[in-house]
Image 1: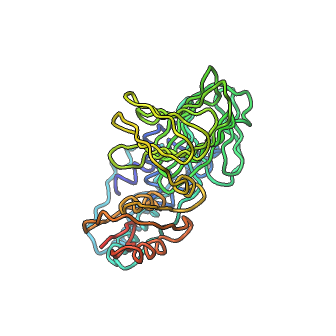
Image 2: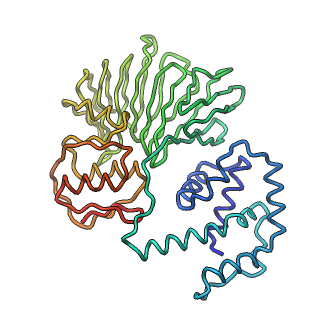
Image 3: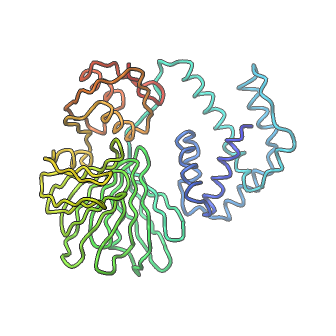
Length: 384
C-alpha cells in the first residue's frame, strides 16, 4: 500500500477530529483535488466524534491485508507489486480510516494511468466555484462552500454563514479576533467585514482581517487579487497592506492584484480617492488611474476599469495582456497546470471569455486568437 494513502488517512482523521494544522489542511486539500472520493469524508463539519469512533472500530474489524490483496489481484494481477506485511498494522488506530478509502485511491490511480496512456483523452476540468477556508483565532479551520447555512464559533463570538457570503455584521457577541480567509486555486469568495466593507477574493488569494474594528483605523492584509468596496467612515481610514505597499482610503472602490511578474502590485481605482505608499514613495490617485508598486517606487498611469471589474463579474478580460499573463489567470481559475513548449512572443492581446465556459472552449478561443495551438490534455494546458 502506498505511503500516500496512509498520509491521506492520517490527515482525514485529524480534520474530522478538529486538530489539523493550517499546513496539514493545505496538504489535505491538495489530496482532495487528486482523489475526489475524499470529499465525502470532510464535507460534514458537524460529523459526530462518536460516529467517527464507531467507524474506526468497524474498520479495525476488516482484514485489510486480505481486502487490499483482493483489490491488487483483481486490478493489478499482471504486476509484481508487493503487499505490506503484518508490520503495516503497527500504524496508529486513528489512521485506519484508510480501509474505507484505499480501494477508491487505487481505482483512481488506475484511471489516471489509463488517461496518461491515452493522451488524447481529456480529464474533467471544470470552472472554479465559490469555496474558501476560514482560519479562526485558535487555528481552527472551517471550509466555506456555496449555499450552506450554519454557524462558526470563535470564543464568545457566533458567526452565522448564509448562502455564499460571510457577513461579519451579523456576528453575535462581536469580539476582536484575527481571522484569515483563503481562497484556493479554482475558487472565489465574497466577504463583508464588520464595518460593512465588501471584499471579493479571486482564486489563489487570501485576506487577513480583524473580526471587529477598533481604534482610529481599519487595517487588513491581502495576497493575490481582491476587489474592495470600502464602507465610508471619515474618522477611520481603511488601509490595505500588500507586502511593502499600503493602500489607504476613506470611502472608495478599488482592485488589488499581486499576481504579477517581478513581485509588482497593481491597484486600479474605480471610485473615490486612494493613497498608495511604499517605504520610498507615495502617490494619491483619482478614479480611472492605476498604480504599479514594488521595489520601492509607485508608478501611476491610466487604468482600464474593465480589468478591475471583469473577474468579479465572471469574465476573463485581457486588454494589452501578454499571452503568458492570460494563461496564468486561466490556470488559476481552472486549477490546471501550464505546459508551454515554445517561446511565447511578446505580443499583447485584447479579448474576453466567460469564466463559466468549459476549458476546451477557452482553449479554442485562445487558439483562434493567437498563432499557437492551445489544447488541454489531462490536467495541463498545452501550448504548441
